[in-house]
Amino acid sequence: MKPDYNVIPNPLHSYETGFRKIIITLTVIVSAMLELIDTTIVNVALTQISGNLGASIDDVAWVVTSYAIANVIVIPLSGFLGNLLGRRNYYIGSILLFTFASLLCGMAPNIWALVFFRFLQGLGGGALLPTSQAILYETYRPEERGKATGIFSMGLVLGPTIGPLLGGFLVDYFSWEWCFFVNIPVGLLAAWSAFTFLREPKVQHTVSKIDWTGIGLLAVGIGSLQFILERGESKDWFETPYITWFTIIAAVSLVAFVWWELHTEEPAVDLRVLARSKNLAIAAVLTFVVGYGLYGSLFVFPVFVQRLLGFTALLTGMVLFPSAMVTGMISMPLGIAMQRGINPKKLMAIGMVAFTIFCWELGQQTMQSGSENFFLILLLRGFALGFIFIPVTMLAVSGLHGKDIGQATGLNNMVRQLGGSFGIALTNTYIARRVAAHRVELLSHLSAYDPAAVTRLDAVQQMATMKAGLSQNEAELAAVKALDGTVLVQSHHLAYMDAFMLISLLFALALPLLLLIRIQKGEKADLSSTH
Image 1 (tube, rainbow, N blue to C red):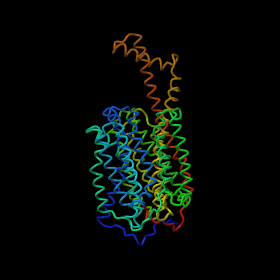
Image 2 (image 1 turned 180 degrees about the vertical axis):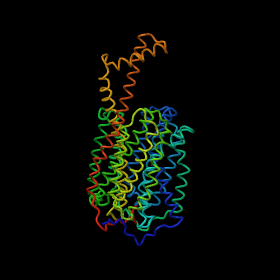
Image 3 (image 1 turned 90 degrees about the vertical axis):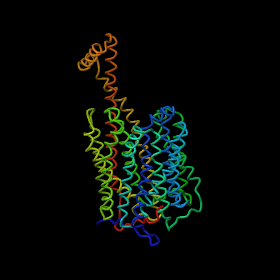
Image 4 (image 1 turned 180 degrees about the horizontal axis):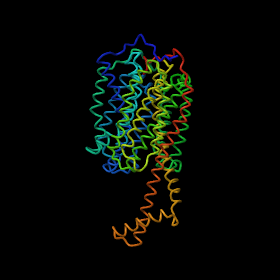
């Protein structure tokens, strides 16, 4: 028996057609991709920003941290703010805020001004993901919602992948400021298009009382948690007192937030929707795992190929790009197939198994691997993400109606962002610990009684003596340093492989969660008033 994923059409809602439908689709996809591209575009420019603004690498990391904190605060509030301000006004205002903040970022006179402007940019950008998704659902007729999900999922994968490629190009051929200036014409065009073609939904969910307590607790709790994840590893976690304090603040604030939202009449974030939909709760866990794997692997791969294999930032982006194109090509057909009755649990199982194999294969690479060795492996990644993103999005909203869909999409987007933050932070810490462990292990095999080690030292020493003209003592010291450098490189290589294998294990362990999802025959989701 095929599950029914059709939606209940709202008689008060008119769906878009023709040219207007195409323009709205392009507008929301471009807006969502702007937000996602800017999560990664500056990563390749941090060294240039540091030198240009005279800031330490530790300080310049706040350029990434501030944007992520603002994002994760505003995403779950997007449904509430859309109801409060009017979704069309909120959406256009968010695009304009993002665009204006991009201009200010490019003109920032010092590092802390740039950090503040990036926070403003994150506040504007955070609204674009869930609101764009809701607009797509209202633009397409019920029988086309699978296609809409496919289109949106394509943007979710293309954005983070295009970011490093575009950033590398702009830094290499222009300057770091253009990582922000490039947003201005696109943002202004998107704002004009939204103003011209986007209509306010006829079905409104008014807000009679603003939940200031919930908003405050969410901002403090989620903001503190994101700060800990972004800065914890570089500050040696709980060895630094303020990391400990922020952990306590995050824990207390989030517990209080959950309690308050479950007991107040008009919550800013309606957590009761998790109780009303078991599928949403399970989908949220799966989305967290997907965010962990997507951003964790996307963090490790560039570091591995650039630091150890000598790839440039531009080459790294070019190697990753075909993977994103595969996801883009299969997203819409998969969405249509689901709309016609294909079980999303089966599709997601295929995707998670494929992503497990992808990470496992990355964990088998050597120091001799070249770009050609990654081609098929990364195509498998693109295939896997297409089979994951669309089903998990549909599973999250299955069985929900009206504004519950807006709450579900906001929560799901927030969970994915948090999963990505956990993925980067914990993977970074895991790599550091594994580097130390592998270094100790490798050094234990080196001794004056090891023929291979002695032969290697003698060869390096002779080369240093003959070619560099060093004395005996200098040549011995140079040989020991060279061998130590080799050990350090091998330790990092093994640690990166361990990180890929850990992500692979995480996906394998998450697979049984799919068995808990239940979709009833005839179950419908009313997506016509999601905002």
